Image (tube, rainbow, N blue to C red; front, side, top):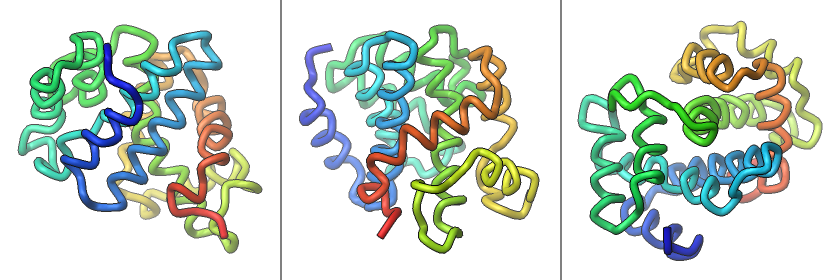
Amino acid sequence: MNFTRDESLEFFKERNKEEMYLRHALAVESAMRYFARLYGEDEELWGRVGLLHDIDWETTQSTEAGHPVKGGEMLRERGYDEEFVRAVLAHGWEFSGVEPKTRMEKTLYAIDELTGFVTAVALVRPGKSLSDLETRSVKKKWKDKAFAKGVNRSVIERGAALMGESLDFLIENTIAALAPIEREIGLGS
């Protein structure tokens, strides 16, 4: 993979103009970098995979319209290698047919939806911040099926199982991963 983070970010911005999509990409990038450090893996690779995992979202807007398969095609056309493309396809396993096998693929599969859920929980708190958000607060909202009902909790749970980690572990570390960039993703004051 020869693309820098800046080149990858520029590619993302060429394909996605909406601020909310950029914020999600930055959140997943930050979480992937954090988990790569935690596991002693390639932080740059994991971060760029997180940044570009939804490269096709503004174009497709749904799995029915081809997400993430179209994203994989976009990445191949741009010259990203197969390890990179496979990770992006695996984050949409149910639709791409590419089962997450590597630690990077399993992590992306698990934390993609979780970053959105953690952000949603922070947004309903008085300070709209991650600085004082605790795992138990996220777990309390987790039980409320009306809250953030677009987040597929079963994907997160399945991802945690694939990773061999507890849901609490994933939540705690996702909060820690997102806290340093909370302003970039629309949180904090």
